[in-house]
Length: 586
Ligand code: ADP
Ligand code: MG
Image (cartoon, rainbow, N blue to C red; front, side, top):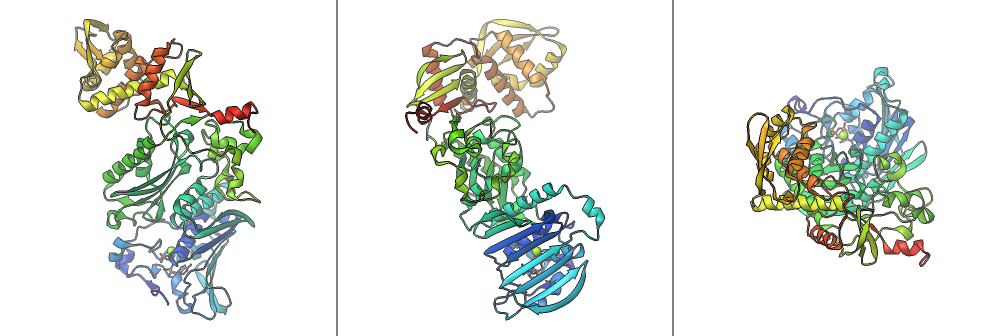
């Protein structure tokens, strides 16, 4: 019945533990105690805080408990039941393994532990204040363990001064609980702050917990991912429509551990590249799995980061699999309905591209905290405006006309769609360029008469730096005397544009803010500039045939739903919403 004994690690193992402060703020205490509960096999974990965790953190579980005679040793440094030697560090599967949490917490607070293993008749209890043990006594208690931590940093006022505002410290605690709840979706979690229930999460499948943590404003704008290659990736991805200004809606679990991962975050950026605007980041909750021997978990004192042995492989797998999901989905931005009448602010936030813009999810911190008082989570999502499943393919569109010389107006099976003619054409031209490059086709279209272009000093430097990138996109440039070049060919996609204007506009685009860019980056930026300056603009009159041809080509694009700046190409107003507006349907 009883598990492995708690023993002090031999010095050789202790020395190999990544060193550093374990307890830097109340959330660290919450994290360490929850991890202990999870390691003890708890099915239910209740967390209680007060004073943003400084006055009180209490974590109760229904796990294995600690036998009375081992209680004292649990508070020794490097005392653990989870590993025995430095060798074990290579295959740690528990959250804890350092044997440092209890002693570190007890050194800066008053800690009381009450614990009863299932086979014990009575509970054992022990209080440690500032590292000094007080009498342990028998007590009665339910099976499991309750650890109470009071007056954190009472004896280290300097640490106390480093804490952020109570609001911020509480928010970090909520995030900490959510992160661990994502790692253990089969475990029920409850967080109570000053007597108020902030989070309640029943045992549930990972995908459901992921959506719960994203909160009501985002949860219906997600795509499921479930990839089982060398890198396993499961969870949910936010659609481009709900891209965020901050990374606070990105959660990663790696082999069961909640972690920060700049690598995975960068892979997401890459996968959403051109689907969302620069400066925005996708929402995502992902569980990434790699072979345990390809992961080092002992690199961070608070175990907040991990190191992948094969970073390149993980990165590439992630980009590929996320892209696959995005390409398979219809990513049409849907115009908001008249949600105000039906569902209030929550519903509007869920479907309004503006409302879920910069920081919207962050601005309403209650979003992910759990059920609104007096109802299930779904009470926030009104049935009338609950998003329907996205249309699964690019719609077939009948062109109705042009609006304001800027938008193509179309009928997509009874939905009204508006297509931004410039954004659409940009996407089409950009993909044409990419397709030619992939097929190894020549990008260049020779000019009948070469154009002579005089360059400023800055342009001259730029042209020489661009070198092969120019040729790759289709510009053939010949030096022609002082500060002058001859343009022999332009990109074929731009054959009908004025060569000199195009060339100068592209140079102007690349001129600003060019630090060191990799060659590939330069090529990409030049391709984007070329497509941008070739595309029809707002204000250009388009006839019916041109609009139809443009939409046909857009329908065949790999990413038809946005231009490469990440702006949407198409916005849909649902026929159903129109019916409501005209009171044809209530
Ligand atoms: P670590 O988790 O790294 O082993 P800790 O200092 O966090 O170190 O805990 C020391 C030991 O105390 C653990 O190895 C475990 O055996 C025991 N322990 C701590 N918390 C609990 C708990 N909630 N339930 C059961 N055992 C616990
Ligand atoms: Mg621990």
